[in-house]
Each structure stands twice: as C-alpha cells, then as structure tokens.
Image (cartoon, rainbow, N blue to C red; front, side):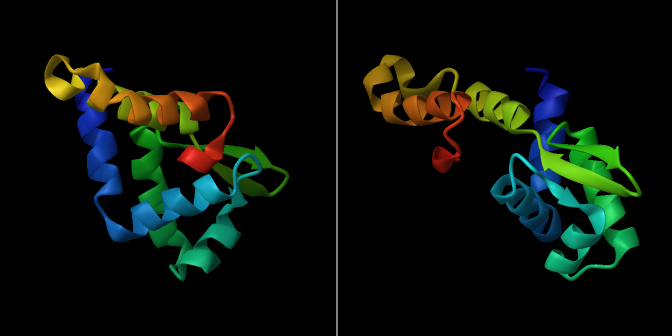
Length: 117
C-alpha cells in the first residue's frame, strides 16, 4: 500500500468527527447512510460534514453515490482492511504465532464477517 495513502487514512481518522462518521458508516454497512442522516446522527452542519467526508473519501475510506436526490455514503471496508493488514504486515519480529489471532480476524472480515471490525 502506498505510504502517502496510509498517512492520509490515519490522519483522516485522527479527528473525532471523522472517526465517528467512519464508525457510523461501518455500522450501517452494506446500505450506507444518506448525507442528511449522517449529519443529523453526528449533530454537525451539512457543510461541515461535507468537508469531513471529502477528507475520508480522499483517503479512500469512504465512497459516495448519488441515489435520487441524496448522496449515500458507505465505508470502504476493503480499503480499511488493506490499511490494517499493511500496518501489521511485518509484525511480531519473526514470531507469526503472536499475530495469528489478529490476522485471522482481519482476514475473516474479508469473507463478510463485519463483527470482527
């Protein structure tokens, strides 16, 4: 994974409103949330939400698609999984048994099990 993208993703999540937005979108997978519903749930103005979502989208963590008159935002779980796996790629100093539970959970979520995220 590109190091600049990793830095952008971690920086995007290192702010309370953006972290809350990402977590809320993860909870609403696979359907996502309309922009207005997301703004109300986070109690932020629409223009403020727009700035936060655009930072998450540039980091590859959120996608948006127009549905009628609304934009539906979704968490990009594949990108988040790739980020997490990249961060632990060389973990445990040659002792993979220490990382096996973590890697199994991350790889399990690849099969659609969001309970491990």
